[in-house]
Length: 152
Image (cartoon, rainbow, N blue to C red; front, top):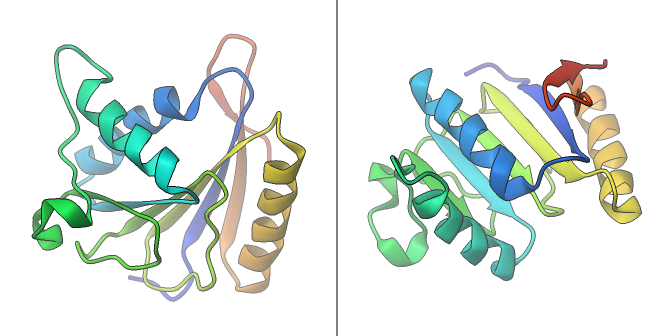
């Protein structure tokens, strides 16, 4: 892993986190990476845990939390803390979770609700911290058609 991760910011306006996160996690796993999803609240963590099992009738995303045990075996690990017991290469920050250091990951993905001024402010602070840490930073926003477009 490199010292400074690539940091991607996903600005939600049209879709919910429960809709966007599964597809991003699927792509992560397809690339052979493991992921940690760090939530800013226990309630959101519980909702995401359920959503990842039920988001698609034809499939599910293998994942677990601390209560499931054996976190090293989980391709996707959900947490409230900054640990990565599954040797994740990608860290997802959702619902206000914040990074304090950016080393040790291939990619960090910050997903924030663009309709929430507090979430937008936190994302701006995270952007500045990532840039100051020497990370490559990109910003993605959904188009009117629902496709993700790189804005910066």
